[in-house]
Image 1 (cartoon, rainbow, N blue to C red):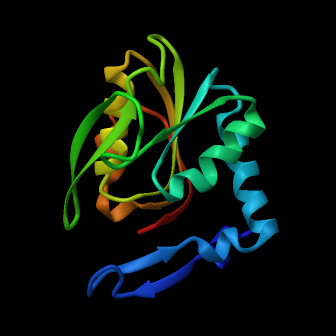
Image 2: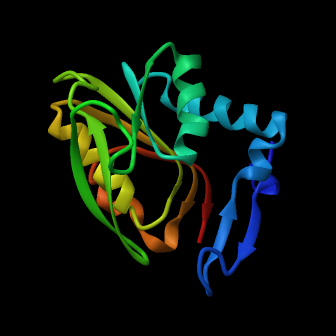
Length: 171
């Protein structure tokens, strides 16, 4: 299945000059959504992961069902003040600002193998921050998966030697 046919371009969102790659048309089509999860599961089947960590909010759309399919735990990474127990934080830069992400201090065990999932990798800011959070807890990132990669922003370079799997790449 050609997943690119199910991605809609939204010009000038969230600000002028940006062409937003909208995944709502992909997840709104049951066959395309299933195909995207099938492809992620296939690419990460042999990683030995014990947990899927996903980023708020669109990463949850793919991360939670992927964790379920693979029989893994699901761990959410959220914006500040949204998780109820003790957390650690990581700041990061965006293409048009900065932000912070949090994870529960007890979400991962030292030595645990983790897949990180998000809908998109662009500049790599939130992806790199999530890697840093996972590593602060002593876990190992064994892969990063995204539906879309904006390769012209070179976000994968912020992930070092972590294997990156993107289902669609836009130059």
